[in-house]
Length: 46
Image 1 (tube, rainbow, N blue to C red):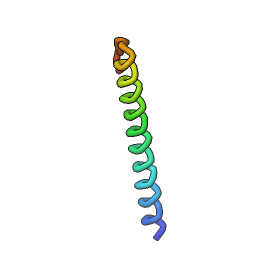
Image 2 (image 1 turned 90 degrees about the vertical axis):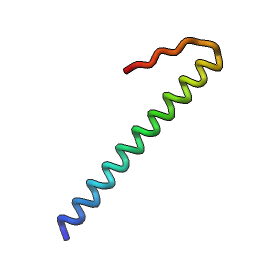
Image 3 (image 1 turned 120 degrees about the vertical axis):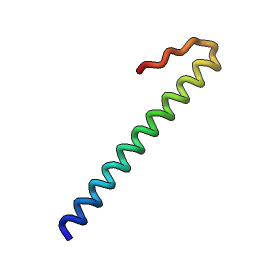
């Protein structure tokens, strides 16, 4: 049982990490779109 609980928390951590990354990607996309709308050149930071 202990092992299953660990797997579940590990899975939750992974889901949260992926969700955080997706949110960051969306924020970058929104920022990029907004800068284009304002006619600014936008440089992607990699």
